[in-house]
Length: 480
Ligand SMILES: Nc1ncnc2c1ncn2[C@@H]1O[C@H](COP(=O)(O)OP(=O)(O)OP(=O)(O)O)[C@@H](O)[C@H]1O
Image (cartoon, rainbow, N blue to C red; front, side, top):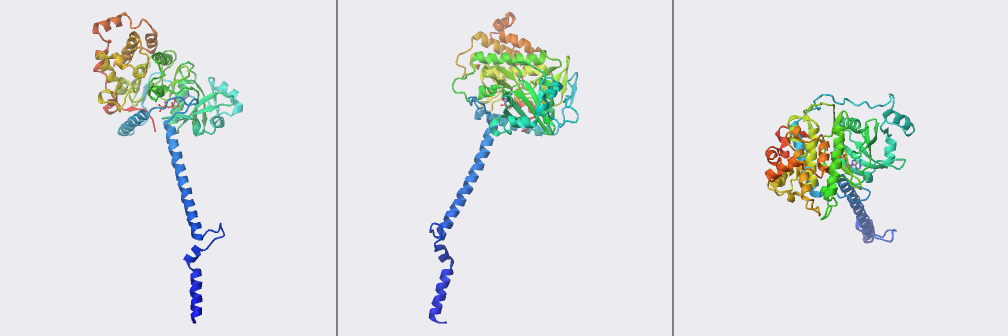
């Protein structure tokens, strides 16, 4: 091979080599190949990063949505982060306790005069829901409300869109919906949780389907299609009491003393109707601030009847599984499983304390002596520091007599002896009556120079945080 041949070969090799190819110009904007490759590589990295970012942001938004309650005005306070964490802690503890409980199984009950199972009133052969055009016949069928088809509720909630989520409870997600006629409703889409949805569904329909009271949230219908169970309620547009008490409302709470009393009295009226105005009577079993919905005029409406029990007159009801929410469950019900309306009265007493003080029943973020509201409350009353109990976010202090009256109602509601607790109807009168405390109560106040019952109550009320571990398995049956 000649020298010139060798040179030609070397040149040819060079032109075929990778470095040369990379350095060669491409038709795309006359860019060199390696520049083009670098640009492409950068683009791929950027696109992947954007996708990753989108996914993360969506996940975070979904998480936030779960914690948040959305409302049309956007002015309703979110529950503060502190409270949310405390709730999580309580839940964690509960879950541990439930774990300890093991598989207790179904609620074993001895019900004297209970309500029995609900007949769903479904026409035989139907798939479960009405269609829009058979509304009138369905109305005849169930009397108090109507069935909704899945399709109707899908349209009302825009396909159960995330932006229509109002909140999420242990039994499912609640959506805001607008029905075809324009009326606004809340749709609770029950989780299909091993028959629990069916149970909650039946209980709610049975307990409040026919009930009409301005202080009880109205159930206007339901949907049962295949395995889907949904409850349709009137929409209450101003959030719930928990949000207003523990959310971020700034230095002054919009809930003045008078508004709080209006809420307390309305709630008491709603419960009095359940206990004293119905046959069989209804025990709510989950009276707490997040179950008190509020309208724009601060009218309260008791909601969430998923744990309610129907008790016939003279009914005594024993359950091996105590239901309710940590901090609100009465000690006697927790330890014996004996259920009567006194359990709701106790929870109402705790709720009233919460309204006076602005504190949660159990708050792990507080110093040890203040974590348990009942203990702290009693201690303050006993050491005659009742004025210091009032929520610092209340700008105008209540009149001493009004404060005394309300504190007295609290203490009577949480009497360890459930028979000594007042009935809800009496509580309404006590809260409304200007002349209450009555002469006898005042005498006791004068004699003790403090509020009556305090001493007798003080040592007896068990620490609610101890309930779950003390053999009384407090089970909220919530299922997150
Ligand atoms: N009829 C309604 N109108 C407006 N908001 C409602 C209505 N019913 C429920 N909500 C809101 O939806 C959210 C979830 O309610 P839900 O009753 O399912 O759960 P919860 O009471 O918060 O928890 P749980 O049922 O586990 O005790 C709450 O923030 C409540 O304020």
